[in-house]
Image (tube, rainbow, N blue to C red):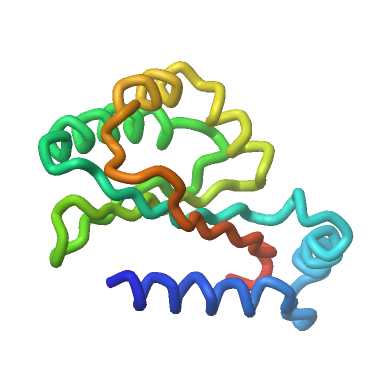
Length: 141
């Protein structure tokens, strides 16, 4: 699962700099805006997390509560969690935001701050290899 997900993220990253200029002019303007300012691009994150076995259930409950509030945020495009079928303590958080500013806003929301507090100390090891990618929205048209 990890290899498939990483392949998808890498494919998105390769396409991030491309623009289809045959689309309508507004989409062309959007592409030009992306090239001029990556802060206007979609912000995609894959965050691997390894949870201590005794906390898996509590971690999932805390995530579900946070997810409910997060999906209501205006800048949130996707916010899901995947659990490894080979290792039930391994998770990947997949987040997709309208832009980096939307993600920064999320980091200060009450539901995220509660999630962060509720999950403190549940990780099996600190320091994961988070992957972030900026994607120009016109690439996906």
